[in-house]
Image (cartoon, rainbow, N blue to C red; front, side):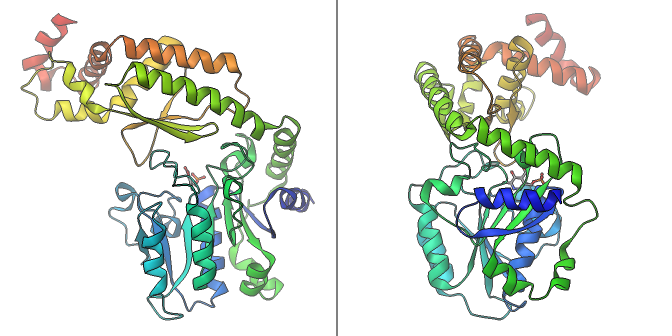
Length: 384
Ligand SMILES: Cc1ncc(COP(=O)(O)O)c(C=O)c1O
């Protein structure tokens, strides 16, 4: 009964006629469910999916097959698909125009994140999602939106697709559905897609999982939905997101050598650093080949470490973009806490790159063991 209640309550929040739910344990499973539904919708006659470069949709084989991030794909034999540059509706149309209605090259669905998360918080140009929706309708393919990261108030609306009044045919949900406590995901479909794909009740069993939709997780999700609504967290994310963005833009203006771009929507924000700042740490031992490049790749990590060590603030990195620091505070954050984060970041960047780099190198020395880098470590340590 909890799963039924959750499906009902979610159906009041999902846009349009997205009202059929399959509950699972994670985001990647929610994506698997959506891909399988799309494939069955076309009775298996269209085996391919279009996905965006640098996207992330999960790490099980199907979801990984539509994940553009190259580092994750290496080594695995994946399902054939087609990629498009994210944010480029014309490129998508080129592919869709040539889409055969069946056969091994035929596409069943386009899968996208409304804002790319792990690619480094990439916000598409205004109107992009709407154009994608229209193209999918015009060329007769399904649209799957992965709201696993953007859903549940994060971007200032309950789902990010609401910013452009777009209703996909299928949606994948997870992460904040369980309020950070329960492992729960959901594949959501319109009645038309669901009933076409699974035309008798027994068919539904082809996509179930022992623990999917179990009572404790559904109860946690029900309670979570109540909090989103009662505390008006999407409104809160929109308002506090403005404050965060304005503060970060001011920091960027003060530290132009450090920050290349700040971007995002609501409380889904990324700071792209300019790795060139590492070149200002001139005392780095020149003899270690590649050291500067390694440090450049670790720049957001070094800032995150300083935030944690000096100010007790937890920051994380992105899977598909090493230049970006993730700023996704909890939706219940206060204005004062946002200001504390801003002043902490400002203080770290004002210190310059010297200390950050020194800490990182010392850490590398400690974890690599002194022996292998002896020729330069003693000189380096003397300086610090
Ligand atoms: C947009 C997106 N889709 C899918 C996933 C996969 O979710 P999970 O880690 O729960 O399998 C993630 C995880 O980070 C994600 O960000």
